[in-house]
Amino acid sequence: MTVREDGTTLIYDLVLNRTRMDCPYCNEPMISWGHNRPKLIKISSLREYNGIIRYSSNRYLCKSCGHTASERNPFSYDRFRSSYQLIRSVFRYLGNLNYTLDMISKELNISSTQINTHIDSYIVIPHRDLPEWLGIDELHNPELSYKNSSYLCVLVDGKNRCIYDVLGSRSKSYLNNFFDTFSLSQRKRVKYVTIDLWRAYKDVALRCFPDCIIAADPFHYCKHLCDGFDRLRISVMKQCEYGSNRYYLLKKWNWLLTKENVDLDNDSVYNSRFKVKLNRRDILNMILDEFPILNEAYYLKERFLYAVATYDHDTMKAKYDTFVKMFKDSDIKEYDEFTSELETWKSEILNSFLRPYGSHKLSNALTENINGKLGTYLSVSHGIANMNRFRKRVLFALNKDIFYSSSSVLNSCALPGKKRGPYKKIKE
Image (cartoon, rainbow, N blue to C red; front, side, top):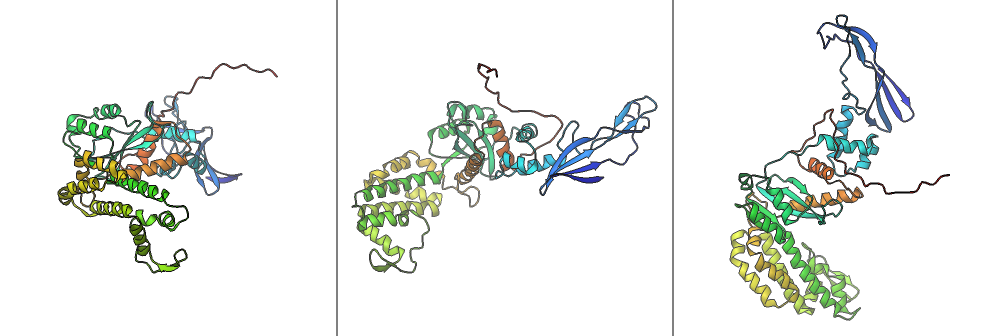
């Protein structure tokens, strides 16, 4: 082997040692018969250099039948320019969603088209058993979603803590058709389904999973509560004179009313507005004393959020109706939507306090985490139009049970392009 440098490329000239080879036709020993024309095979880059193997394979002749044959190529498949090692490197990068196809292309000196061909050919998603705990959520993306739908549907295996699948629509008919591909015995394996407060998901779960318990995601109903409180704060602030002390308290210190785990008993600091030393608890008390309606709304919000964080299922079930009555009696119109949700989704909200898998509450926290990764990947990729490739890539990257298997057979999931319209050619 010799190594030479050609600009930014390292070229490895290789000829393998000759070994005994039997004729594939008559099984008689063969003799040396020169070398084939050199074949250029790409390998992974080395620092700032691209790598190419210039491989001249040994050729053999059978004196018995006259046939010739070449030795087996140990670096790549026949008629491939990418080495086994380069394909492994491609999938190592594909397993990390922080790398876009363009980044992988520049890192390995391989075209994005070739990377897409590897994704289409080597990642095959099998038909898998449904998970015991199924999380259902959506991801807004009009480019990838199917016609008449702006959302993808993300399915998560809550028990094994991984993504299960990504579907091209979240519509009720589409989800029903998808889950109908599984047998009834398979669908009965699903014991828990966690959803946000969207009726279609509940209807699909009731129809497709006869033995499941449906739980509402705590993040969503708590967010609706916090959004209602924030609307009330903004409404009260707009009624205050601009620049007044009341306006200052709600504008500058609003985070004391909404942020969690704030250290209220910090050291007192001089406040130039009120010309006195105050800590965060002093300022919070000033706000609550100044605005009685915010005081009542804040008390209700914090008490409910504390219950969500600390109560078990039995405790919440015993006190649930009390919470509903408290919100109804408050007559705070910004809480009307949340109060209606408490009544409409009572069973699902109570089910979210179950903990069938140790410390994990029935929620879509993992689903939201995965949605964040998918959203970031879509953003940095500047738009992805092929749903099949997107699905294969994210399942390969985020599900430990999905592997790739390389072979010499190539496939393509490319979308049909638009036909070019008529045009008039301009003669020079």
